[in-house]
Image (cartoon, rainbow over all chains, first blue to last red; front, side):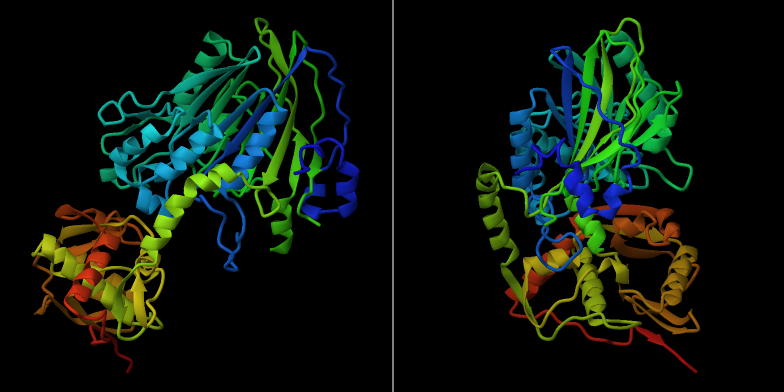
Length: 317
Length: 254
């Protein structure tokens, strides 16, 4: 695969090809500053959402997504990135379950074990992860070697009590990354029998509580939210966009639920007038999203223009 | 469509507005960030160990899904309103299986949109049943007031019929009349036991009045399991999967 080596060099080639949707976002071409020496640390966050038991690629049946996705390809891509980058974190934003007979027959074991092999660092719960009930999720947890982060579901009166955690702090080359999870309101979306005595707590107040804790008490350098709230809604309903606008200290929201193919991450101004980045990559493992953060020691604020540049055109021909 | 497909195959990178961390006690700040999206397609190489891992599951799954469990005498299709062979078979099978668990069930409702495929003539596999009902819907019995059953009847009439069993009616101008349930004329003063599935019982598909029953009992079997059991039963008795258009719903045009 060439895409990684193309990362910073193929702009000219891409623009010549002129893929309209991509070029439209290249509204600024501010060059990168040079970051020389050891003082720059690169953190690479990889992410999926709503993979929905899509173990194999979509069948070649003429449908819209035919041939797309597939865990074996994703696993190879992740291995390749890990080989090139020292500080990789891999997250999923929920709805691991449901969508193919792999789930119906094996209950999620295949999905969990494959995610463990790929080295997922954490996931959160989507509404479909309750499709075989609280007990059905609990049964699959031994197949996952990574934690499930969820701050706004109170599982104390369920079998999942003590099996999930609200947040986790990851350390990569001196960078502290605080990650917490948020789930969608289950009432009306999931059969009560399946979520049982799970109590849904207000995600905005929970998020503020988590972000303050991670930023101010644990002094995390980056605060990340794994969210299954959904990107945004017409009606007045909490979403990733609402969450970003209503909170402080969250740097990145790794979203899911609405299966939104965002062309680019969206920058939302939070309560402090700072940017919270909202991102979602469709569903079914059709895309793998990658966010690279470059950290510098002791550097003062310095503003940079946003710029979009395309990097990979493998398969376009 | 072609353009968006190509777009997904392309990956983009972006330096998005950097999140500046200004707290004075912080050692590190983000000075640059980039975004890349990798389209996972046939151009992506595959990890052979992942395939080796899931192959036994895949083989067992394909063997299970392609297992023939019964035969139809003719194709069960759903070409038109108000009743269809697929809808009648499905509703009858649900009522038959539901009554094994709850003999008091009097009639059944599904929706046309909930039945996702048809059955071909001949061999029926596990896969056909999964395609018919891909959701994890579970069988539910609702004890309903006559008033709510009237709303249900109005709903069926408005939709020019739905897959039902145990209830018969005529419809003229989207209004139902000569309605019988379990062989008796409908009486709005009585209560009735409806067998359906949780998605509808929770008020899905414009059926919000179903979410306020007098009583609700979750039977504890998935609809798909009920259909599989029905077909297995028929096959073990040497019978085929059949359905008739028996005039349970008739649209009268003057």
